[in-house]
Amino acid sequence: MASETGTQIRIHLQPNAKRDELVSFENGTLRVRIAAPPVEGKANKRLVDFLSEVLDISKSSITIQKGLASKEKRVEIRGLSPSELESRLGNSLHRR
Image (cartoon, rainbow, N blue to C red; front, side, top):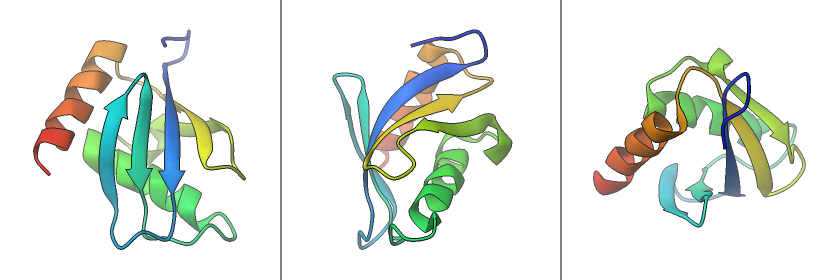
């Protein structure tokens, strides 16, 4: 979903995983596993860092808008169109 400032994406986050990885992108929701624990914002920080690496964009271009204390999050990605975001996610998912 595009907004005036960026593209929004729904994310289902699984903290405390063995490693950081993209699991799937289905029905508009990106499933992500993060090795960080869900305490003191560590999983959220690692999610932003990981998405920055995967999408090859700056960390400051990624904002968790909703769900800071939940596994279900809404994240805004600035600087990428919805099609560019889907393309980069697709490329990363196919490399696993």
